[in-house]
Image (cartoon, rainbow, N blue to C red; front, side, top):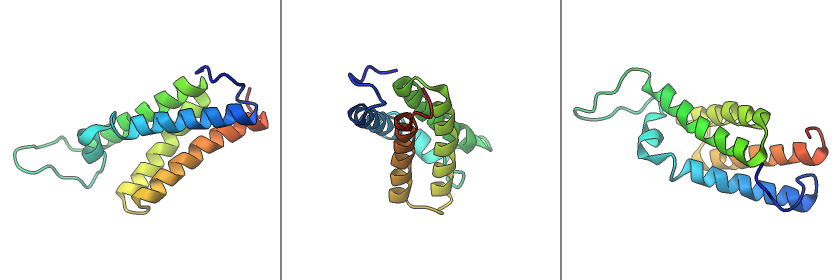
Length: 128
């Protein structure tokens, strides 16, 4: 787990952890996602011209993007269970965004709520 100077079981430590998770999210969602994953994770995206892509490429791109997020959660919290939750939740939220069931702002807010939930679980003492 990232050394956050305070135990995540304290409010200050929880805030530090939440901030670290948001930083990880920003890195994974913007510079580490890149244009290729951002476009091709959407099953409705069609490349133009000679850029023929394999059928089903979107699932690999969406999964790769979600694994990057899960990796950050694992590195920051030290908990594989949170990483697994992040993988599933991030996949579901981004798929919903690609299907236009939620918009970009709702997607980002719900990702932050997920990070807040991991911190709340630690603060509540449900996971050591």
